[in-house]
Amino acid sequence: MNVELAEKVIAQILTEPERLDMTEWVGRYDPEWGDVGRADGTLARLQADCGTRACIAGWVLMLAKPYARLHGDLIEIMGLTYSTESVAAQALGLGLPVASYLFHQVGDDEAVMALKYLIGSPDATADDLHGFLQAARQDVA
Image 1 (cartoon, rainbow, N blue to C red):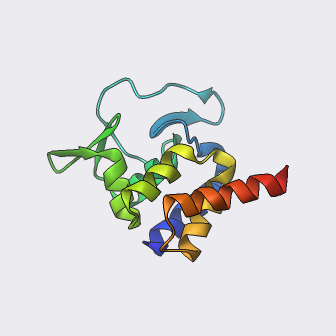
Image 2: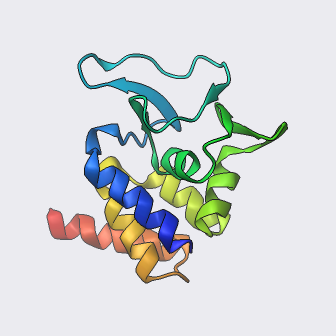
């Protein structure tokens, strides 16, 4: 687990929670206007300082690969195209099953808790993360 990167993502989420959106990789957000558009299929440079809103994977990519260009589920790095999910998983040092669960099954309100759990449990499986979040959800209910 890339703890340093995970902690940067946590800090970003805690600093500006309105810029976390687990429903899309990366989108545009303006605090005065709200949601001003989603990806339109064009390549866009990942910029963390322009009102961008993103999921955990999107923030991982903006913080770890700011030179990359995102095209939906694909990311272009130095002219080569990769799966957005696999590049974000690799940057975090997570196996694809755990990363996939983190990126697709965790809600906005669970993102920080899930990342902190994975920092503390670097060998956790997707099932472990699921069980942890299920227990946390029951504690809240």
